[in-house]
Amino acid sequence: MATAFVPNHLGDISPDEAMLVAIRWLRQQGKPHCVLAAGVRIIEYSEPLRRLVRRDEITTLRSASRSMLSRAAAVLGCWPSADDLAELHRVATAGTAVCVVRWVDTVEERVWINSTGAMNLLTGQVGDDRYPVAVDPVVQVAMRSLSASVNLSGWHPMDENRIKWVLLNAPREGHPYDPDHLFEWVLTEQLFPWYQAAKLRKLAAQVCEGRSLRIRYGTHYVDDIFDKWRREADGI
Image (cartoon, rainbow, N blue to C red; front, side, top):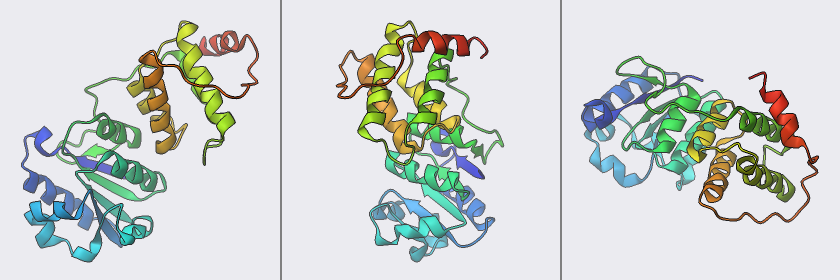
């Protein structure tokens, strides 16, 4: 994936300077290209965007022109929302060159950068390594097992049931997890698409908050499945 990002104010650079760096990157990519903005009003707050990018090259997720994202060779995401990042992750995974101009230091931004291997256009550094991710080896094995057994194009209720069962029982078996770390790790390992990883993170957060997850179907897991996963994890 050819991905990049501009830190914006997080890297001691003004919004206009950050946008100029990003637009320069966009012009160096193949055509056609487009800009994804969180809303049409964003254009009003960026002089470089108004001056250097044609209006018909700018779209939003709510616009009828959003289909240009799938046709573009390169996409620039301007101060993306969580939903924007999900779409930018999809097109980047499909092979489109993508650059993101950051605005706020959200988990979703950091996960997008790290899971796509995006390069900082100001420093040349790949990724955002300020918050190292750690996932229990047994949980890793369980996630790989789930990825291989559930429908990655859309979870069936029985798939979601298995996800819930693993998330509920991993801590009970002595294998806790951090929902944000899990979110980033499964995306970096390309185990789930973004929207499923985000749902996994939400369910994991509910478990960590002490909430119960309703399980409606049998899981078809053998009684000693965690023992099996522990043996597999010994090699990690």
